[in-house]
Image (cartoon, rainbow, N blue to C red; front, side):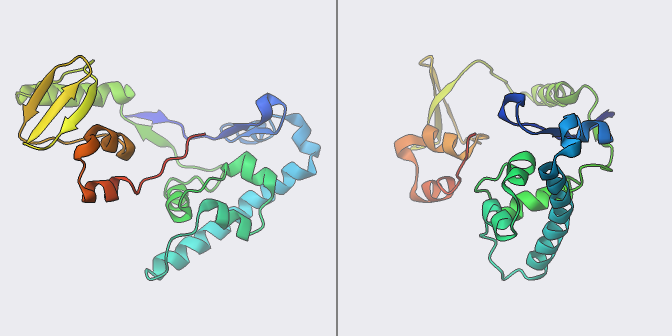
Length: 208
């Protein structure tokens, strides 16, 4: 294992707006020296402290009361609690994600506090190490790994037929589609079942 870093930094308006970070303590926090005398930035710092308390209380209520619907979005959460516009831009980047999903991730990964976070560890040599390890293990078991072969469609009428962009196709007894839901829908095309369409179509992505 080797040490990793999960710090946070913000630069708004191409460096002309608010800038701050969390990696090097106060030096990063006040990377933009004008923030020392900026009352709006000091308000954001107070809101960061308040945010942690609000989030922990919110999650405690939901997790102790499983019958309460978890439909509130992150945007609704911050607006209902009166957070400033600068806080939303400089700390959270509010979007219409599930508040519970995002905030529980923040809590579980110690992201609610800008400083004093635990030291994160990662596999030595990062993804190169474990991707190669998985590749070696699969190949020793007789698996064939094919790269550079873009899949165009997956037909499921009889088993599973994979059609590639280069015109090749191959039939299998079954397929595991390890892709995002919208991509799976696109690959299944007209052969998608009602249940597959209902489940895969329920995922929404926001690109910014």
